[in-house]
Structure formats: C-alpha cells, structure tokens
Length: 150
Image (cartoon, rainbow, N blue to C red):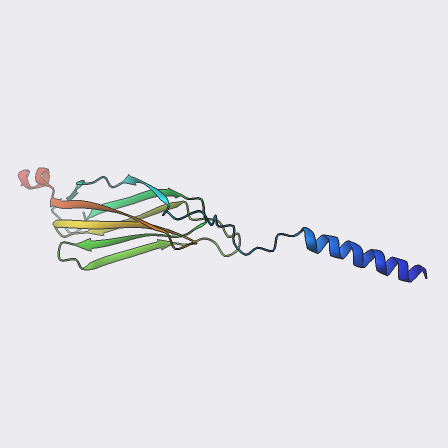
C-alpha cells in the first residue's frame, strides 16, 4: 500500500512537471510579416577603397552589420560581386545549434587587388522566411598617393 501511494505521488509529480514545459518548437511571432531591421555600420554607400601599387596591398573591404527582429534571425550573409555581376565571395552566419541564439550581427571582410566597382549584398532572414537585403556599391581605386610618389 505504501509503495502504491509513493508510485501515485511520483506519477502525479511527473505529470505536473511535463505539463509545465513549453513544448512549442518556435518562439516566432505569428504577426511578424516583415524582414529584420538591418543597420549597416560599414561600408557606406559609395565608399572608396585604395589598392596599393604593389602586390602586397589589396583593398580590404570590411562588412559590419547588425539586425533585430520580432522572430529569431536564422541567417545573416554578405555576398560580394564585381562590376560584371560575378560573385566573388560569400560569407554567412547561422545561430549555434547548441543554444539556438538569433543571428544579430555580421562581421566579415573581402580583399581585392583589382580596381573597379563592387557590390556588397548584406542579407538577414528570420525563421518565418522574411528577408531584408541592403546593397552597398563601392569602388576600389589604385592609391593615387603611391602613384605620384614614383
């Protein structure tokens, strides 16, 4: 009889414990129909980057951006294109599988030795598939100061 009461109490406590867990697989706001709000810190639109006049001084383009959203952000990416619309580089950030954090920042860089116009597409996507893309057009030029010194 004592074992039966103990077993009943255990089952009752287990039931309460299981009912107290939030078993939903997503914390997405169902009212969220817009893409993440993106703030691009660098590069600015129309930025100009200098390429040195030797083989060891590429233009280094730093991309730094942050994003916020009502839902978890599952992807942040930066894609680099040249003036012929050829993709030169791609970098992405995804949340950690261990802690399921939202992607709130993107930090990467791209280097080139070629003069010309480049496009950087910075994109964040939330767990509902809402996407925001910010485009920055930049120019890489041969460092004029180095040329004049020769």
